[in-house]
Image (cartoon, rainbow, N blue to C red; front, side):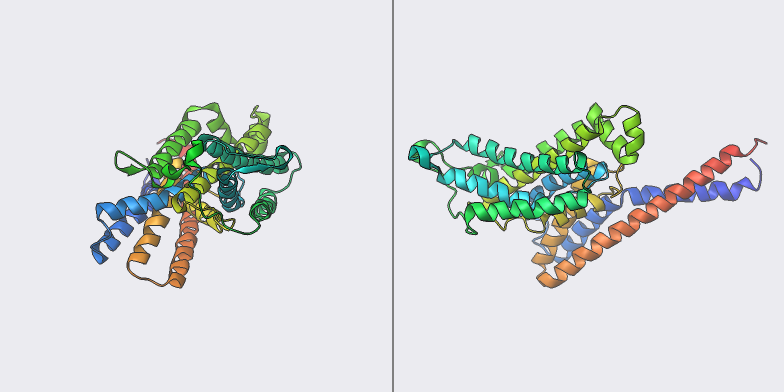
Length: 357
């Protein structure tokens, strides 16, 4: 190595160090939030409050998992908030009884049937998104913006704009509702947290251990190259939107179960929280880069920050401002990381072309 190579080598090491810190930015932010709010409030780090905050996080985390799958392919899904509301309304209709006018009877599905139908509805909306993107070549932003309005409109039409206030089911018919999703516990931990863990594990397995996961990353990295290498682009795109719809429907069921009521307005702006969690977690909106771990940490950052501000009595208006600032900062850091990685790659390439001395 010549004397002239020493500065470049030193810069390369510094860039690697900066990149390592930026890779951990979401985790560092979460630790800072926990420490700061723990010092400011004695109630913040109590076991009951940590469980409550994690329960709140679970809904956004499940949404973020589905959103991550879409974003990894270079797409976006703006319809998830509306799917949340639609899934709850479908559950409300089925639990109150489906009136079959032609048969002059009322059909009551068992609770597991209600859950399955609601999940299928969410998956179906995701399939519509996927079809619009793959079959009709509609840009993901426009396609999912359209289904955002359509799904919300269908929920309003079904409910007449009203809330279904009692989702307790009909015990005399063996249908006791699905309170367990929102209020049930397993070994002292809320069911919604267990569902978040289950969805997280399934997503990690899907992205790391299956051909589908490799196809998702390949599609986000370079769609044309992925297609030429044999990746079934249309099928992969369709499936990621279906997964996103499924996750949104599950979130909708959890919310309806917690409140024991279903409102067509439920889930408004939830798509923004899901996108924010994915971005804070280090995923690139251009696709091809991101991880389930990062999306989950991003959801915890948003949830723990929001609950901490509530505990401290910070104005709702300031909470919105702070959340927006966090999202902008996350994007700035992501752009900085990409610049550092490009600079590091350029230095490595230059070093590789230098003759050995």
